[in-house]
Length: 111
Length: 117
Image (tube, rainbow over all chains, first blue to last red; front, side, top):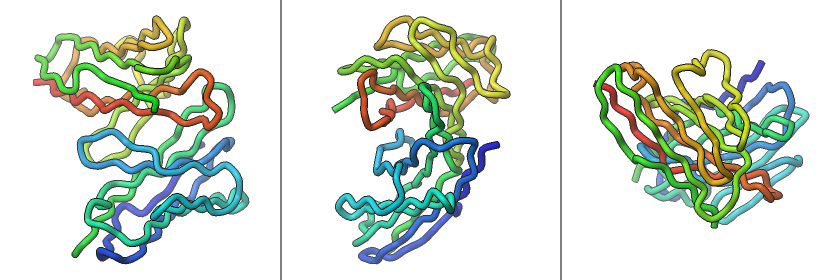
């Protein structure tokens, strides 16, 4: 089966650093994605990891450990606009390569 | 960059009627498009995978006769919700995978909010 777990909600302070964890157990793996989604809008792509290690992109970094079935998204220098849902998604192998999403983590940034 | 559009952005229909939602890749060709449904405060649930020129592959629990998917060209896929009922009210999001992409990234449309009264 497919199982992707994320915390449901997190709260952090403006200017701080927050780490959102994601663990997965899937029948096959071909990459892990992080998306940001504001209420009522479509998800926007943040990061993609297929090999172990850290990928850094500005204030956002994403880490992957395939042996542990674990990833995290790190947000630095939090801004109020970072308040959103963050979705972890695993891509399945094969030509179709569909994404299986976790339930999402709602992050609230407080002043 | 790759852009995916959806039409309409929102629709209200009466129970028992059918609604068609279009998903277009505007500046790239997509052999594969995906349809998701998202209920309030929940994550995206994959409904079906649509491949150009062939029948869609539906996820377990999704009624193929109720959610008709057509992927007639490399830039257009449609989802028709037939005989809609209030429980079909949801946010429907499509995504498209680029034909010649190397990053395996999916590009999401802006979503269609369906309300069935």
